[in-house]
Image (cartoon, rainbow, N blue to C red):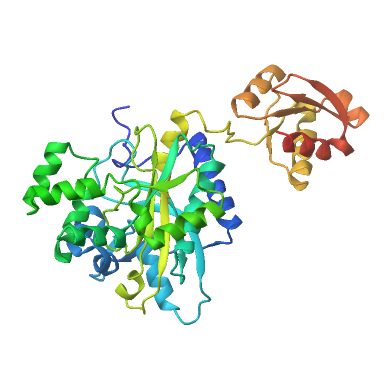
Length: 423
């Protein structure tokens, strides 16, 4: 084992069973996205360094992204996120698009971070955004999409909550404390670290930012006020729309939610497990200034992103991952050398009928073939021996129940589809 070349640190090998989970998550994301009328898109994995520097600053991109010079001397980055790409794409066809855009995507991303539980350097992420609509109702639709996804993967409101705040409300409250706008960015960074630091360390950090004890006390009071949202007409409309979407059980106000990224301009939200055992499951919010930051005209936008790592860990820990098979559900055995060609033909006919079928390729003992089929995750095993061939029948064995019966070959495809649709 010592001589085997190891995978790059922070990446993951997706063996078939892991790929089955990733594909299942993708199917849930696709289903929820399409149910709300969102269209799938994607962008390149490589982008110009300047695209991310325009949004986050060159120093941050250098530290957190995979950056290199290509052979032409141009600075390139492996995409660490998709929102800047989305903004660039919208800017490139700004006057040709029909708004609001409802777009979603799922693909790989790379960030040069310290690998730890719930965080890797290579990951897959669902991005879903609405562009061209600036209203609390648009924000609420994205929250409803998030709630629908959580429900679709089997997570209950008692296990996960989408916590929502509004940056404009927070700015208003900071101004009421006498904290000038020039300090709001620093305060937002402080608030974003509240759950990451002890009370003493948090106060010490606030003092280093030049905040007085009175100001720190006021900030603490703001982020503890669960009724603060009622001061914001925008959030009042937001929660009314969330209720109309029948998503209130998953979505609630979280005064401590602020999001660390600078480009958020209004509503912000994060999903957290109520037990507090994992990192944030996902986050997002309103960003109305990003398209113009990459050269377009200002366009309002709101969206969120879900990485595959944390949600997979949480679903596994809670026992919510479904029983997934990485292989074909139907396995055709070989009774003997003389029946090999007939068995291969049977498998081909079933595939032509739209079924996924794996074929055994040697005349091994049937018991060995049954065990092989079971290990591969097959649900049904087919046997085509001399008696079955003579009678134009096939023996079908259900590996879960152990039930075995003979069927006419002409009825086999329809019966297999019925069996598989019922599981």
